[in-house]
Image 1 (cartoon, rainbow, N blue to C red):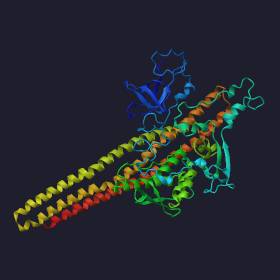
Image 2 (cartoon, helix red, strand yellow):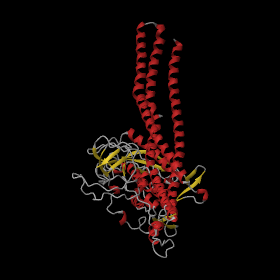
Image 3 (cartoon, rainbow, N blue to C red):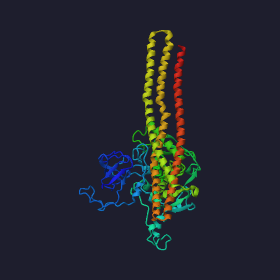
Image 4 (spheres, rainbow, N blue to C red):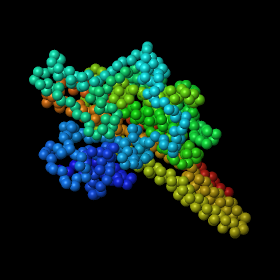
Length: 605
């Protein structure tokens, strides 16, 4: 039968040769072989074209004798026996939650390594349109060529963080119980050798066919399957503790804040190159540094790659034109201030070496900046090794129930979906209301004011002395309505704009969580598969327990991140709504005051 696939997400075609998909839509595939991350097929409307392979799930038919290939088949390189399933069919029953690749990607491009941004649905590093990557970071040497850079020599591992020979460092590996264990258990004399053919060691937990899956790209799959190995320093450990509401990240013992002030236009190359620099003042050092947007952009990319189960806040969107306009610079500074607040408030991100380097490296020391930059880029605790750094509670009181974890994550998934819809609706409503205030309301109030002034001018034609005060009162009423129109036009900057800035930041967070949930869901799927193998007598209990222990680490981290999100969300929305309502009260007090002034003008008539 024809190859088919089910769409996991909506996809809107934006380039020639692409077709649009709708979630749950069933498509016919021209071939199961993807072309650099893209598949070709026909959607339910009969349109034929390309779509991202990561957006669909191939529907596996029960194994059967394959029919002879059609004479005019589009792809003649399929194996004559068809594709044999690489994993049990039950492995495909678990829903895949993956954040889509960039909507604006050209055909035949691999998906980017970074998560999407809140506005365009994709994150792209700077490419010349905004604070482009110029010569001050260019250099011919590669990270691998740098002697003494992080990871090139273990005794000098941590020059900045108290590492070196005296630093506590532990080699952690998860390979023994799957790779080595599965081989050694087949050898005679090994304690897990089974004379009857080694049936319990023959089964292995399958790998995902979709190699672009976030679960795979993040290293989560390799970690759960026991293929991570690396040296972990004490300073690299990320601790999850049990709080009153469940797992949470261990608090930063030295909390701090960082202000972003005084965006200034600077030049280089004798005025040929212009850029905006922002002054950063961390509270724990008091030493100001200047950073450009590209520095923020680099830091975001590093953190998004390093922390697959942590929601790294998105930066304000890029802009190709008008980068030096006052309104844009002011809006970007406010967006970066929110970004910085969320970075400093996160117990893990605030203590990350790359973030510390970003905040403390002197702006004038280019050599020190490049050294720290290369050190961060050579960090070995990324991918599968990142999960080795997570330390979780132990003991019976800290045991996680698989069904309870799945229920909590599913509940959070539903919550984020509803919150995403609500924030988009509120953003649209607030934007429309602000637009009406700036244009429509201002115009209407000034129209009323102009009418009162017209009546005053008509009354002046009566030439009666006793009516002079009335004429003046009418004229003042017209001026009052003119002023109220200006109040309306200026007000969104005070109340609605800050709310929309906050919503934009949270739309970025909400765009991150499908990937985070997908990593945790992928780990749970592996645990269920290993338990099924144990029940069928195909896998040793010890091996399955190792998979569950590693899944628990990912679950602890995911639940801790969910807790932090809720905690910071309550703080932010409480503060922002208080600010919004106070500004609304002040606004209507100003309107009332202006109307009262106009009213008193009639007392002397």
